[in-house]
Amino acid sequence: MKKSVVLYKKLSAPLMARLHEHVDVTLIDALDEPGLARLRDALPGAHGLLGASLRLDARLLDLAPKLEAVASVSVGVDNYDIDYLTQRGILLSNTPDVLTETTADTGFALILATARRVVELADMVRAGQWSKNIGPAHFGTDVHGKTLGIIGMGRIGEALAQRGHFGFGMPVIYHSHSPKPRVEERFGAQFRSLPELLQQADFVCLTLPLTAETEKLIGAREFALMGPETIFINISRGKVVDEAALVEALQQRTIRAAGLDVFEREPLSHDSPLLRLNNVVATPHIGSATHETREAMAACAVENLLSALGGERPDNLVNPSVYALSLIHI
Image (tube, rainbow, N blue to C red):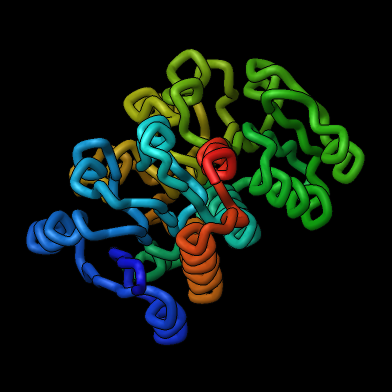
């Protein structure tokens, strides 16, 4: 008898066929109120869950007594109560690696768009306000040769460093839990304390996960350490930054500009002060949002889930202690 999977993310036809071959699938095609009601109704019989952008806390998980595995179509796992999943013996997997290069592309797109004021000036042209040759009031700032500061030197941070070093001749400095000798050798990168990086980098880029330790890591004190020409880039998680302090720093020109793909609350409120600032480039969390990468992420999640439900160790297991315990009990 096939196991039951609740899918709360639409998949391509080939991936749906792959799932149907091995499991019974209940598709929740929208996470609105009716969709969430259908999800809650389906959870009691679910052995597996697959999706993204839904907070799975103990309250929801308690509706699924048969649950064995959750496959997230994302690299971030801040939507999951990992301790509770582990306590319940539920395998949690994610989709790292396949989104690394695309997310780093997004980071560099924000660096370029913010430094060269691409969005602001494109809007000026679109509004019919380009009536004479531009002058210093419209000039941006160079990217090539500037110092790239990366906070969080994981896979995405390393991919960003690669683009800066080889593509734009940028000296790379970074802050991480510990020095990364391989990164230093490949890109000539240099480790810095957080205050040192904030003071020395022309571009401060966040590429670190959201944890209890990193929540509001960057606040008023940190923005004060940056210079008036510093450009701030966030492609990690919105809650790593104190957004009110960021708004203040941008309004007061404590820093030059910001390129933001993530926010404290998403979608970003229409009345957010960030949207009234012309020194902000804001995108709607598009980090990994290309057709190719999202399909690769979904395929990775499907294989993770089928492995878990088949008694095998998923390639991208977030809580490996659960699988280790299952082997002991065999």
